[in-house]
Image 1 (cartoon, rainbow, N blue to C red):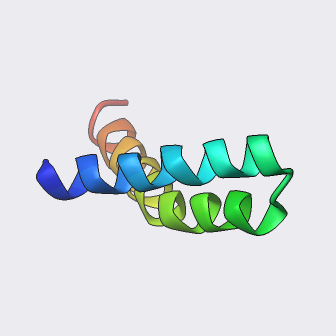
Image 2 (tube, rainbow, N blue to C red; image 1 turned 180 degrees about the horizontal axis):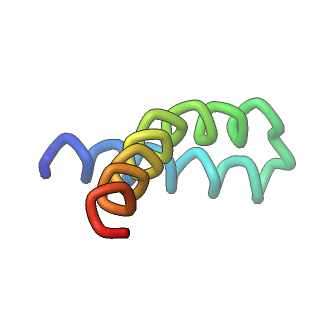
Length: 53
């Protein structure tokens, strides 16, 4: 949980930097940081959906 909180904090800071400074690279860094989490949630949903038709 602590690691996830650190990632969310990093992402939120990158998104603020992207919004304030029109910094596309900061937005891309945020996207890259979240990508593995999104993939994990997708896999979890697919697993649960497969177990409960």
